[in-house]
Length: 224
Image (cartoon, rainbow, N blue to C red; front, side, top):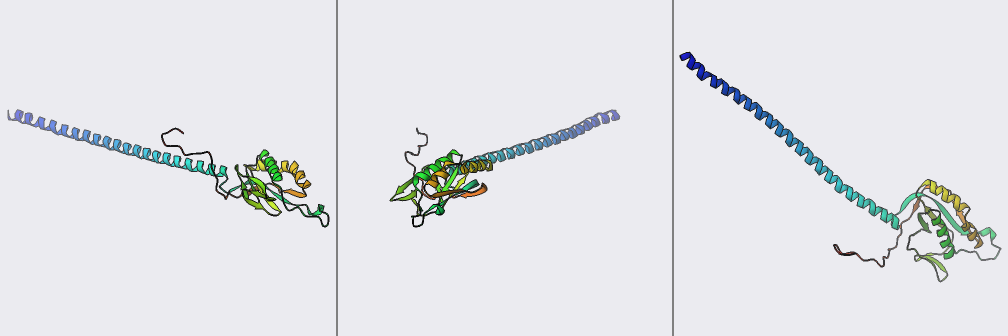
């Protein structure tokens, strides 16, 4: 009886001890799983934060790039691009002794030249250091040719023409070599010389204030 009682008491104690270790092992596994899940959550949160930061930076960079493109398009930024240079100067050898030397280029000649350059895919142009933009006005004021108020007082002057790539610069050069502008300038006792294509010409920025007319800022949330 004593032996039987001893066994009866002993077996539950052994069963309880085993259950405790099993519970501990199960709890440890749960903790490991929880730790793994927390690590995965933190990793995903970090990825989301990094993605959001990158998205914001991408938006900011896109806005900056767009603004820079608009500035270049408007002509308010100096550009270094492929292109050619033209030189306008008097034809000294054709002038008779005692005859006056033509040291002035008319607005009409410059306008024709600009039209021809634009027709041949010129994108950036400066005449006598003055950047030409969409609103540029070339006119005669008191027998002085002026470009947006800049007076061309004497010759020679330089015309810098920029394009998108070297291939276009080569085409522009070949077309200008046989253009009618050369003849038109020669009739006025002026020589139009064309330099060979250059992979890097500097076209200065427009240095005057740009006047915007017929435009008004829109109200946020209202009709434009």
